[in-house]
Length: 256
Image (tube, rainbow, N blue to C red):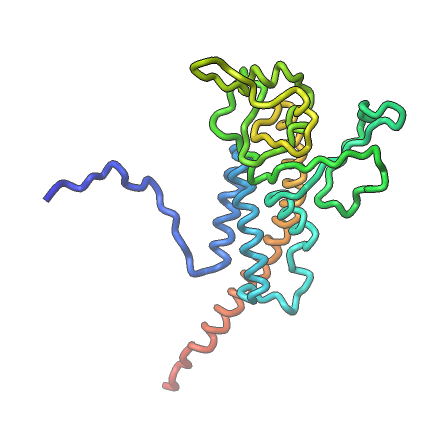
């Protein structure tokens, strides 16, 4: 018999507990670890998954808080967190009414949906932004490149804001063939809202991800507090149930 290969033995164990509260606390511990070590995308993904799990556990009465509606997850924070992670958020910018190409200073606004966007204002431009789930860069970000590749496309007009056509083309949008080379899109495409790209300008990427991070942290903080209150409520119930079991199974001392 061949000797067992021990090179792939696990260095640690992740233990599942039948105690639902312990499992939630363990997941919160992992999230806090990722936060402490600046692993934002790992923190955000697990925070999103835990939110969905706790929400579904409440709906299915696995976590029964029917008599305590104040313990439910903040529905607005959950909605906003889902929109951030799954997508369909927007940025709006307003252009000068007299000089259409000039953006009004400090006019950029973040929207979780289109409900508060003023569609009657013809000077407002609506920019769809990628889902936070798709903002993890593909591969290692090179220090010298001006473009960052993600896993969701954006219209060329918004992806390359701040860069000129020549810079974008030389940064990776040229097909090199045996009989020559040709560009992947034309100068006029730089203003297209229908042609898409998975590469976006470094400045655009950092502008979007900074807003997404701030919004995610704000909403996750609310949900995190909600989950902690639920945990405390469940722990009290477990203690009371344990006390009840101890009293019900105690045996009276027989008379001498």
